[in-house]
Image (spheres, rainbow, N blue to C red):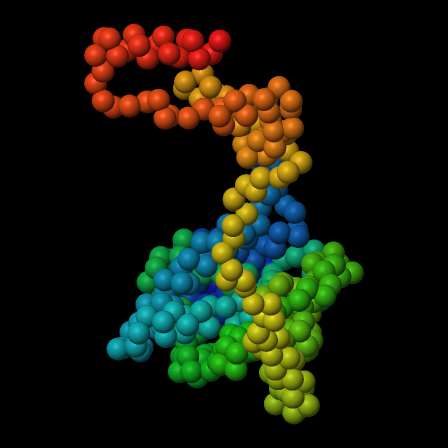
Length: 350
C-alpha cells in the first residue's frame, strides 16, 4: 500500500522516495511540501548557502518549532490535568519539552539517522537530535498547520512513546532537590566552576562541582553549565545517601561557621559622654587683650600679677588704694558752706 501511494506521488529520485517513507513512519502522514522537512534535517555544520549567499540550516525552523511545542504540549497538559495549578502544569510541560527528552525521542524515532551534518559532531552529545525534533515540528506547522502538530504530539508522541503521568510526577531536577535539601538544613551551597574548555571537536565543555559549607562534593561535566551542574547535583545527592561521613563533615563545617557568627563582641562600647568639644585654656597660650565698649582695656587674672610687679603701675595702685569717700556726703550744702569747704581744702594742701 505504501509503495502504491509513493508511485502516485511520482517522486523523481529514489532518495526522495526513501525520505518520504521515513517521514511517514516518523510523523504518521506524508508531507505536502518536502522542502520544509529537508530544511528541518539540515544541521548548521553543513554550511550550505542559498542563491543570495545566506546560510541554509534548520536553526530558524528550530526556533519556530520550540514555540509550537510549548503551545501544543501546554494545551495537552492543560486538558490532561484538570484542576492542577499553574506551577504543576509549567513543571510538567518543561519536563516533556526539555532537550534531553527530545533528544531521546529523536533517537528512538530515527530522526537522528536522517540529519544531514558534516559528521564531526556525531559523537558529541550536543542535542543535535533534539534540535532537529523541534525543527521538524516547525516544518509540520508550516506544511500542515497547528492541528497537524497537535495530532502528531498526541497520537504519535504522548500515546505511543511517553507516559505523561509518569513524566509529570517524576522529579528530574537534581539541582533543585539539592538546593531544597540545603535550605531545609540551613546549609550553604555553591556551584564552583572547575574547568571550562573544548573537546577534540571544538565543542564547549564545562565542569562544575557542588560545594556544601565549603566542602567539595561531586563534580559533573557537560556541554552546558546547566547540564554539568545537574550531574554534579545528582552525584552529590547520591554521596549524601551513601556516605554518612560526608554528611558529618558538612554539618561539622556548618557548626564551626554558626559558632563564629554567634560569638559575642568582646569590646563593649563606652557610655561616657564625650566632652572633647570643650576648649581648655592653656597657660602657654599668649594673653589675649579684649577691648570693652567703653574703650577700656580688660585684663585676665594672670595679668594682674604683672601689673603689680611694675613700679609705675604699683604707685598708681597705691594711690588708688588711698582714695576714700569720707568727704562725699548726700546732705545739701549752701553756697557759703561750699566756698568755705573749698578754701579749707586749698590751704590744707600747702
